[in-house]
Image (tube, rainbow, N blue to C red):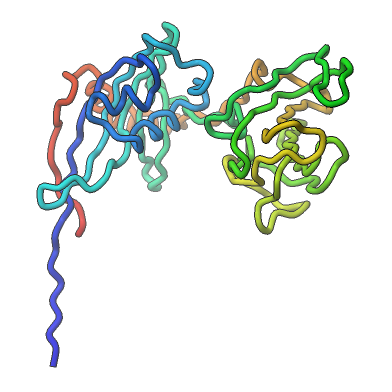
Length: 289
């Protein structure tokens, strides 16, 4: 016969602080101080609503991040959650802290309780390069005539996921002349967003369906009038085009007054760690198997 036993081998959780300065890229800066690519991606993800990490980060920008690391039997397993972080971009300081509400929902907030997450993503692709900006007098590269370009083009490799900028309903999905494969989403407050030149749509996406912010709705391509793979993104308010790079993005709801005391009590120690020495290990805990 057989006997079975469960042997618990808990993970060790270390909370570490890293401090760095960008010289060439965020990836290089994080790795040079002992971090990983995964940590760099997570840090960019925390501040992506306020900072364009492809076009705006420059040499001299600095950051501090307090995060968890998971270890087992003395071996590094993976990075865990970022607990608190600071990023200085072009002299402007951004701070974020992770807060888990009593119902178990975790999100990132500014020190005064406002969500870092906005109601809309600034851009619909991660790390896409702006290849053509918003302009009312742009010469079309294919038609060779001046025509208003009421959106922003993001160059990215074919197949790059395109994400819904905000929660909304799919009002159209299909082929649309020069736009190629296009999706239009209806959001609250009269806002609509358009995503064009897709190579294909996300599986199962159909008109009338509701999508969440950040949900993949299609993939970068060059259908329609396009000279290279990119996504054309438009932002409209009550049918009027707005420059996505300059429009004031609606804010998400702040911490409710009933939770403010709990928020401050739980996040104050995390924010204080941003002033601790770099590479310091805060504590070691046990968790699970």
